[in-house]
Length: 153
Image (tube, rainbow, N blue to C red; front, side, top):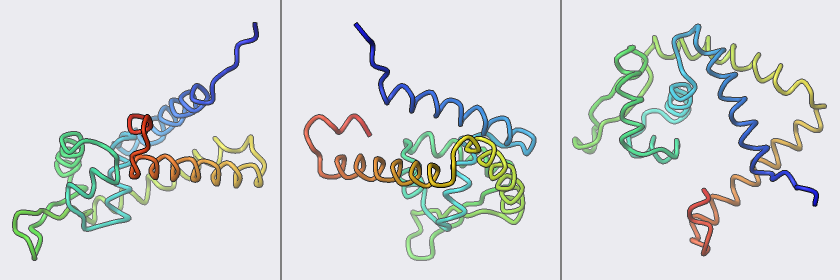
């Protein structure tokens, strides 16, 4: 009997390779892959609350809080009172954080270029579109609450 390799298995393997690659290119800048995710989200959505950051990162509030605390300690993020709601702290990047992100973006751009160099431009475009479509469909299933899918996203 022929064994079919599952699509999930390929995705998991690629995810592990991507994380390994990110860890390698970010380490010289003092950043981990997880910290890069948080810094990227803050950079693109700042200022944002911890709850918003957790939703964007799809991580627990506790996990996100630990990342923010570590990045704040490094001087890359800061938290300030929300002008409209004193119970909310707004997270934003510092000048030092923006500078390190610029260096990290250059490193990640180069890593992506090398990682995806085995694909033709049309193949890469199709891959991005397919992954985006899969991600959006999974989010939609979660929002709608289709039976049996809630635990898969």
